[in-house]
Length: 77
Image 1: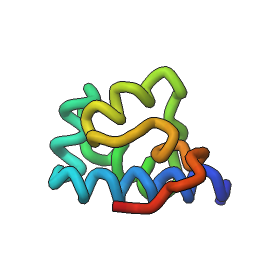
Image 2: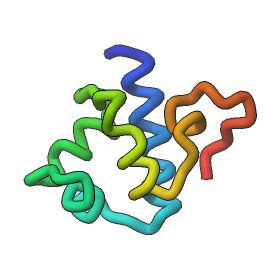
Image 3: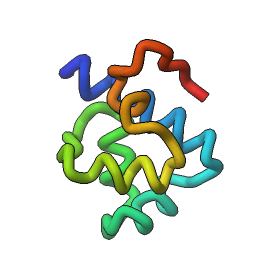
């Protein structure tokens, strides 16, 4: 498994939970037809195109640099 995808998925899940959203709710807000895509993202099985990051951050109410894991002060919510 790609470590970056796995780590991104862990951060995605942490921010989703901190926002109080279910996988289904996030899927709907991002335009996915099913929560399965969110499950795959959170488990490091699906890539997220960089162009989707701003929308994800809007939905999850998080900073893009934190979500991407490139902010020095990253800490999971």
